[in-house]
Image (cartoon, rainbow, N blue to C red; front, side, top):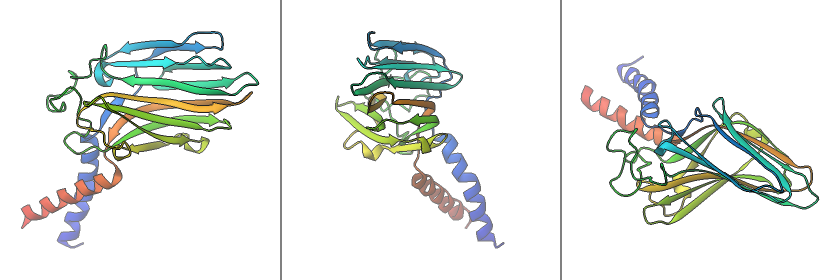
Length: 244
């Protein structure tokens, strides 16, 4: 192997893992258990929060929305957030459940568990870490659904201008035990250097007897693969310049 090839091989080996490990924000790894409960057709919405320094902003808020023709259940336990839905009426129903991260008591301005510099200086939080990160990533467990109107995962952000942006992806059984990314660029016009609120929610529609189960193992902000390669290329270029 020539000297140049040796340098390139070393750079790819060292720089890509380093950029990934140094450039990930764990929003929630669901290691903090949370009893949320079940909402039936005759029940009321459930809204509960849990505080812990391991959760971005220090608090996870969950809302289960009552559906007059369905049973809706969610809990966090053993490093997983599990959500299930069962349509139990002859009428169609729509699913809408929310998980939000906007700081303790809706104060998303500062995150004391992170080092200074991650906050952009405005009212929100810099999810790009200085331009390095550019996507949300979910680690998924089991997905099982037979909803005639489909099952969607939506992510919504609110930036310092108080404007909201939403991006979504359709969930299918084939996505079980995989990771999926939603690029920041799919949230048109939002300032990811100054975010006040991040929320993800499940949406979909169903008819009698149809059901869905979704497990979430982690929620992060990460660099997309193309961004990782660009960072690695920049690092290699720097190594080569120093070697000359």
